[in-house]
Length: 137
Image (tube, rainbow, N blue to C red; front, side):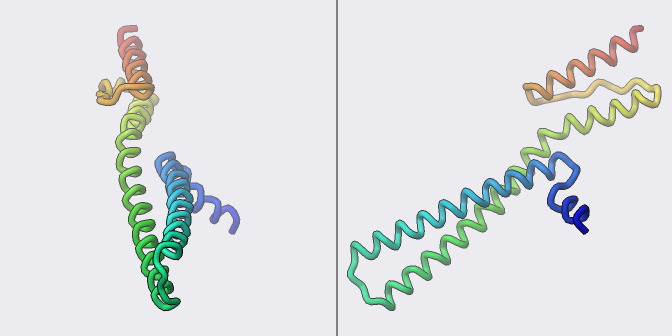
C-alpha cells in the first residue's frame, strides 16, 4: 500500500516528477498570494467604507469566490503550459534513449537533430560525434 502511494505521488518518469514538483510550488505560491490578497482587501474595505455587516459578509464571500476561481485557473493553466514546455525539452532526451537502444542492438542510429541550445543540445552533439567516430572505426 505504501509503495503504491509512493509510486502515485512520485512517478518514475522525469517529466511527471518535474511537473508534480512545479505544480506543488505553484499551488503553494497561489494559495499564499490569494490569502494575502484576501486579507489585505478585507482590511482595506473595512477601513474605507463603513458598511453594514451583511454587505461586509457579501463582499468577503464574493472576493473569496473570485480568488478561488483565479487560483484554480492559474494552477491549471500554469501546469498545462509547464507540462507542454517541459515535454518539448525532454523530447531530445527520449530520442537519445532510443538511439542508445539502437546502438545496443549493434546498429548505428541516424544523427539526432536538436533545435534548442544548451546542455541537452551539447549532450546530443557529443552523442552524435561518438556514433560517427564508432562508424569510422
